Length: 128
Image (tube, rainbow, N blue to C red; front, side, top):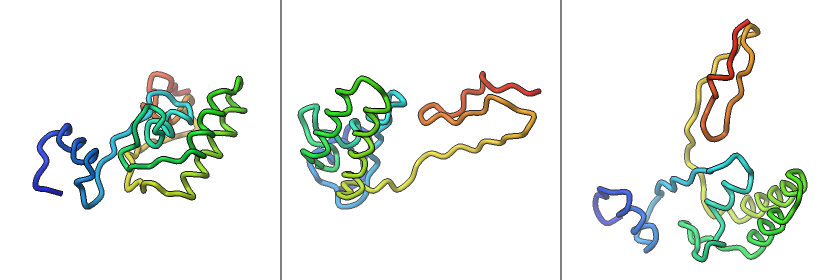
């Protein structure tokens, strides 16, 4: 990497121009809990450009498109799971870490659900 990076915009430029020689923060987060959202925002080039990792797979793009064309979530997820299998095979990027949550549970507490995006919805927790 050519020296310290002081802004996120500068980092994105270095990623885009392939001027990094080591791992970097991808910072891709899903906007909804659908399986396709994380797959598309992180690995799909359908928006007209390649991903930060420079990944492009016609097979992956086709599976995402087929999944989005389904009328039920279960049918769509079958295609999205196949798309994930393509990623596991191709391994275009390696997640180095994820944010983790600490959650405590007891038999006297109900409504504890770990959310994949926003964490635990504490407003739904009740104690009996």
